[in-house]
Amino acid sequence: MKDATNTASGDLIDRLAEHKTLGSAPREELAWLAKHGSLRRLAAGEVLSHKGMQVEGLYVVLSGHVSLSADRGAGLQKMIEWRAGDVSGVLPYSRLVTPPGDAIAQEPTEILSLDREHIRALTHECFEITSILVRTMLDRARLFTSSELHNEKMISLGKLSAGLAHELNNPASAIERSASLLEDRLVDSEKATRALGAARLSDSQLAAVDAVLASCLAGQRQVGLSCLEQSDREEAIWNWLSAHKLDPANAAMLADTEVTFDALEQLAVVVSGPALDAVLRWAAANCAARRLAASIQGAAMRISGLVMAIKGFTNMDQVMVAEPVDLGPSLRNTLSVLQSRAREKSAEVSVELESGLPAVLGYAGELNQIWGNLIDNALDAVPVGGRVDVSASCEEQRVVVRIVDNGPGIPTQNLARVFDPFFTTKPLGQGTGLGLDIVRRLVRHNDGAIHVESKQGRTEFRVTLPIAKAGPEAMAEC
Image 1 (cartoon, rainbow, N blue to C red):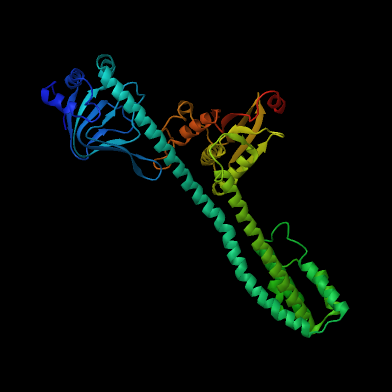
Image 2: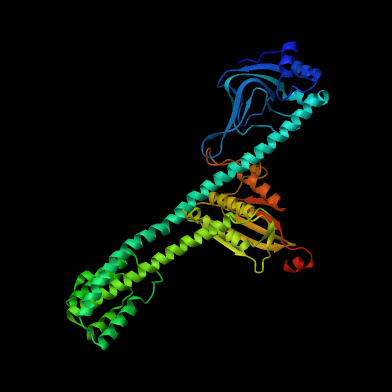
């Protein structure tokens, strides 16, 4: 709908005098605004300002409803809205150039638009209106910062939750599978134990039984057998059992143990016939049960380790105060919760800490969020089979953490903008452009600094933080 030119009529000034935000300004200032502005009417669905295009000016909403939505990585979400009595667009001393999304009228809307070229004159001619608009801008910035920090945390939490669900599912499935098999093996062991008791073995025969059991439990293989190797081992044991006129049904269970053919031959010298079958069934079932129990214990320890890493990563039991933070557990906990992301890319992630690295002074939860965002970004950047190197060292009385990836690098024209809000080079729907902006804010909140250097095949984010101690003692540590 075309703009409608409007003079400083009494009706428009009266409407401005009733405006919730600007109504307290002197009438002569409202008259100046009405004279230099233009009345604009928008139909429902009409765009007031477009994403990525320069905002034309200050917008005083007289009636109706306008909302701005942006893609935060999971589809369009409403970020802010304006109704009758609100102001939007370019405010005095604001750095706003382009909006992060389209501002669209949700119903028939009427606004007074003041072109960008008149904003400087507004600050000279209308002191009260300028003061009101500056306060509005500060309130909007505080609301926006708080909202975006919360939203980015929720997005990060969503990614983290998805990765952790995968990480926890593997050991949980292993426990379920092993527990099911363990029940079967215990049944086998009970039957074999009864058969073994009925065999009435001598002391020397029992000693041979103990020896073959020890052979079965000799330890885990350093390298697991391939399917073909396991099949060959099972066939070889089947042939041995058949050659000794024993039940070949025990071959599969024995093949899963560490039993050696030497141990089997020594056992066959002192035990034979049905008694030997009973011994082999008992040894195989007993060994399988113990290995399944060890597997369950290992999976449970993996889950326990993940829970501890999550607790350390989120610092759930700590208050938000600056305190000495040991970067070793901080970085390792972050890597633990991002392991699934690394496996998706078959990426190698290393961490190297300087010996005797002093603690830094900061907020533990925020530091973990910094490492999480930077390492997650690095994993996004690297190709399949790529590499991310994390290191920390003490330099000039401060601790420096470096996160380096071998991805394609950041183009020179984008390097100066990577920390700008809403700037992202990721495809639509895959990035909010807020992660690095929030990282920089968190680094500054921890009295640190962050820098980036990039070229083809190497990008380095460098975070510098204060050490926890001050004075000569700290000087000695670095």
